[in-house]
Length: 354
Image 1 (cartoon, rainbow, N blue to C red):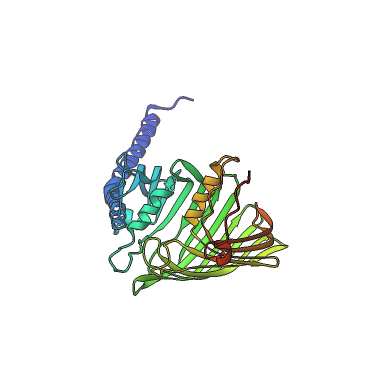
Image 2: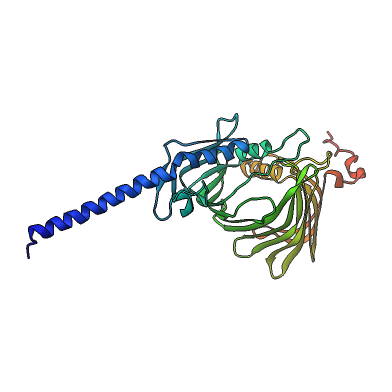
């Protein structure tokens, strides 16, 4: 049945009114949100942490599914460095409705899709947080949660973790901070981490990290549960005491203890690891960064070539040690200061005789 001219005019009037309403809402959103003020808030927070933030395209507002600001081509650099710490193809700043309706500038969440984080540049960024002048370190402030989807963690050109998903709460003095992470390692195994602590006001030359809880898993069986406290003195200098357990299988559970010191004679990032089980005992001082570098050298070396010396200082006595993907039997190792003086001064093997 054909519509009358009046009915057609009514439909066109309703459609036109709807389009006009959408246009008015979009203009209202752009005027009220003013994307530049939110991107400047992020830039200011980055500068406070010694970082620079750039965008390849101007930010623009969005109303669906929640009011916010869309970001494209976001990159974060350590000040003075040309390589970015973080590259994000797309992101979004989610804002509360009260901000859209004229309230104060506020950010509810920061969402980052398919970001690429460079561990080398991240270490440079962490080093920037160390004052180096005897002043107390500055704790970066995150007023809102961060949500990362399908990210990648690299070290130079080497992919360390893929399918990285991270969700955090605010990072504020006196409030508990929580980070939840899931990812896949180079072997495709699923890994998970739940980490929390309560940062307190600086005491002396450090920031207290109270009531630390760390729960990690790798694959189907390996679980690590640790708790304790720490004091961060800036950069890689942290004094911590964590204890708990590592569960590999029902027959292989270990007591685990991690300690670190910020004493002048203690290298930054050096950990003291104690692992005790029914048939094994490990007592080692090590640097996770140096150990990871050594493992890459071992993986890249030829079978016929000489292996580099592991960066270890301590002892391993393992009748049987199960670390999930690696099983060690009948190992006795002394390295660094744990090597007896008599062994260190023993004569070298004699050469061939004619």
